[in-house]
Image 1 (cartoon, rainbow, N blue to C red):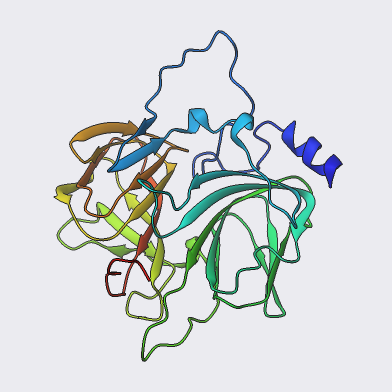
Image 2 (cartoon, rainbow, N blue to C red):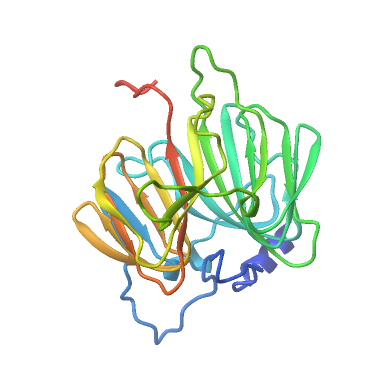
Length: 292
């Protein structure tokens, strides 16, 4: 395991991703001649973690995994993410885990950005390539491996599932972004659509993972202010995004966290589509203090 980790640590941006579609971390380290100026921001209402700061020096590892490293871009923390954690994982050839997480109360979602992975959920194996998505219900037996040549890359969300009277645990989901027709927002002339991996009418789910696409010039033309916590990872394109009272320019590989009720809006800049992965918590009562 030590050799695999050391070899992985020396890697620099080897995830095989279609750069125009699924951006990932820069990896490596910047030169000593580089400037420290970027758009990294951390506030009580939102945070921006730009691609330029996702370097080798901030990677982490997990027990029970071989040949992996990850960028932890969200975790429950006072003044930061409250409902979920999100990782960007780089998995070396032959890497993986037979026991990715030993907490039976946690549900998981995986979105592949490069290479390929094989994921087994309750005995059924599935091959996922870029654009592939998997949802793993709480308590399911699962494993994940890279059996192909080269490195693979994926996003990994973890959220404690909230039981609710009248609904059972969700079923596993295996899907591909390319096979799902986006749901277009009304009255936008096709400028704004959402690719949904979970059925929004299935109340068993207490989180949604989607891909939001805005065409050049498209916009979220009002300051959304709502209870849902958000994590947004930019896959492609650029935009100017409003976060609370600030406007921040974001592009491929940048990450934004928005606390519940943080006002948000955006303008897609072009020349191509602006696309991002979106996490949000849904479909449950508001926890009352103390949270339980």
